[in-house]
Image 1 (cartoon, rainbow, N blue to C red):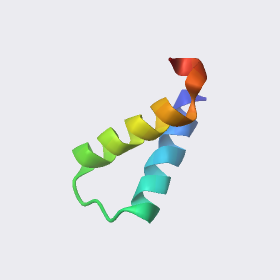
Image 2: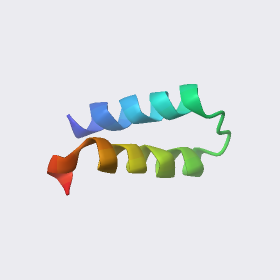
Image 3: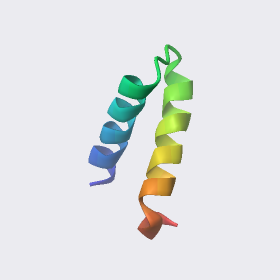
Image 4: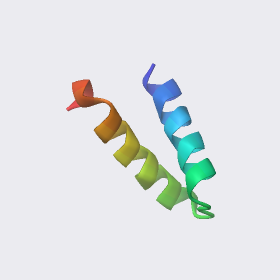
Length: 41
């Protein structure tokens, strides 16, 4: 489940922001995961 959420977040980031740097993409994905999934807090 967490993997799917992470992939979805990365896809969303890729579609929203043209980020070439994978590490930046991971950071954005983590922010999406954190804010969109309060149960993980």
